[in-house]
Length: 337
Ligand code: NAD
Ligand code: WQD
Image (tube, rainbow, N blue to C red; front, top):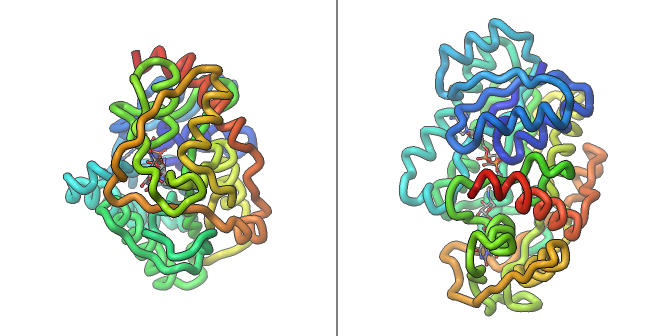
């Protein structure tokens, strides 16, 4: 049994589907601070099987002890975290408490229960403003905001825990690039509780008519069309990466660190055009000033994940947009109305 913390969230819910399809039993622990209980009902509709769910917080040590005592948990996929960069700058203590202290509490409970397999959601944000692209795992690490620092700190905690009991732990630090898209059923997808911070959900809400126009944050970057360039990865490919990491850890004790990206750079304007094609709707935009803290380019060298995990991203930009549109124009719109 795999415990999925944050399993009701965007990436977690898609990973639940991937686990079910891989025949790996799992249960979800989520405090629903950024998700809805109905997500798991929709996961059940996709997979045709019940999803065991515990509503609770990773910082609740007594609860974690109970979960590990009552269920035969062999490993944890740990998505639970707060993820808004702007909010993290305004409320750093909340972010350090939820993300860093939460992860420390989870690791303590795991160790006490003799559960030493963990797949961790890290982020390309740990590369800061990269001097070179594509980005390899051995590039320098840095952070410019509390969210980024929380990810870097958690990566360090995991490295120290691994080093403290050599060969005992099996830990994967997966550095996601920009997850987008939705499950092909249209039943689950990204469901921002507020004004979206990220590009694709904002574009999708403009296309469906929930928002008037997109603000493109700068067209004077040193990139082919002047707008920011990223590595967007379909959330279903990303979900498969977690299954591949779990399989890898079965045979490889120690600490694994890999990028999960496509290796294909896409600009803001390319994304707008792709979404217009997929949706058949116009996405009006205006160019505004750069967003503070944004980097010009960020995309992955995904070779290590291919070599070690046998994993590569299969779904392209058009598929990401078509699936995001199916979700946004259907269930997503009715939830956000
Ligand atoms: P999400 O907000 O949709 O999912 C996170 C889930 O964790 C939510 O369901 C939330 O309710 C839950 N949660 C948060 N704090 C919790 C706590 N203390 N106890 C229990 N549950 C808690 O976010 P997501 O996009 O699915 O991201 C999942 C993970 O991937 C996060 O760790 C995030 O930092 C990381 N990540 C996300 C992105 C991205 O762009 N979406 C990129 C890189 C890394
Ligand atoms: C992508 C591009 C923007 C919105 C952030 C976090 C990172 C990670 C993923 C978790 C950039 C441009 C965006 C808009 C725009 N999260 N943009 N108008 O900045 O790569 O990464 O989310 O780990 O930590 O920093 O993603 O989707 O916000 O932006 O022009 O309304 O779209 O400037 O070039 P980003 P994003």
